[in-house]
Amino acid sequence: MSLATRVARLERTHKGVLRCYWCRLALSDVPPSMQKQHHATSDSVLRTQCWHCGTKYVVPLRGLNEHQREALTLIYNSHPTKQFTDERIHAASIWYFPYRSEVKEYQDAQQKQPVSQNLHMRPGNRAPRSLGVREERYKRERGELMSRAVEFIQTQAERYKRMADGPEFFPLDQTIKEIEKQFPTAYDPAMDDLIRGLNFEKYSPLASRLRSALAICNLHLRRLKKREACEIVLWSKLLPETLDEINFFEQEKQRVIEEALEAKKRDENQKSQAPSNEATRILGR
Image (cartoon, rainbow, N blue to C red; front, side, top):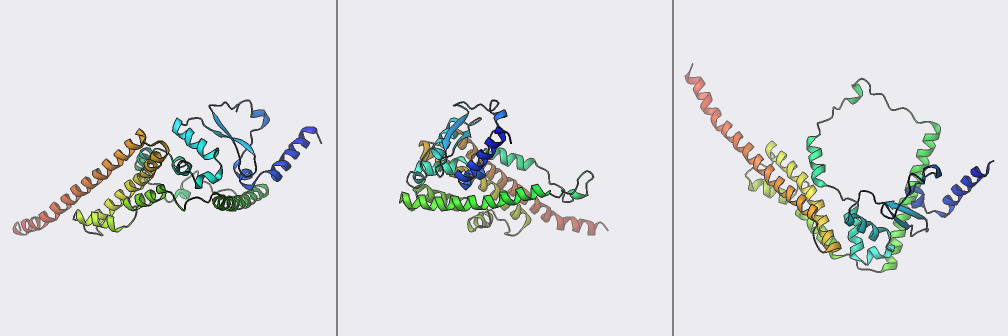
């Protein structure tokens, strides 16, 4: 056995013994042959280490703005107990991971065409191939590792929470609960009141379409309002891009309401004209 093979085997054993379950699951290695291509500079990565087992690793920063970088630094380089005692670190975790353009996601979804349910009937689509023995084994071992990693992280979080002895919840948590009530995304009394206030029949097709359109807007607004609350905690101000997207969805809600009212008016006009048209046909006989 060559020296390189022995070293590689020792490294695998070392990682399996000394790395925690989460690091074994989440971290990936860059092969030596690729390390020069992946040369990390201080601007391109955040250097940090696992608080559970001490494994050192880097978090990519390419393409992130200054606020995203600051949030990542708070998340990865603060002791885990801090998320239970420091509201800024708590807010950074809520703000960073779902951060994206809600407007772009909304517009992309609007442009997508319905996909045929009979994709398997189209020529060129093949049945998925069966996995080989090695692939099946890898899949099974990966699933077991994920289960252990999730259990490990949950246990560690509970331990750090006991160590921190912080408040039961932060003011931010109460703000988020209020936001979820303010922007319903399903059947909700507030949504029903709005529909009735616009004189729609509760279960009419027009009311259903309006309810669905408003729920989609509210889903994006809910995320953006949570972002807004976190930004106030993190930077004492609302970021311009978040404000722009909130304004977009508030205007979009008004637009879909106006379109629904116009459709309702057209339906009413057609119904009112129907009897007179029938009378005209009878007289014309």
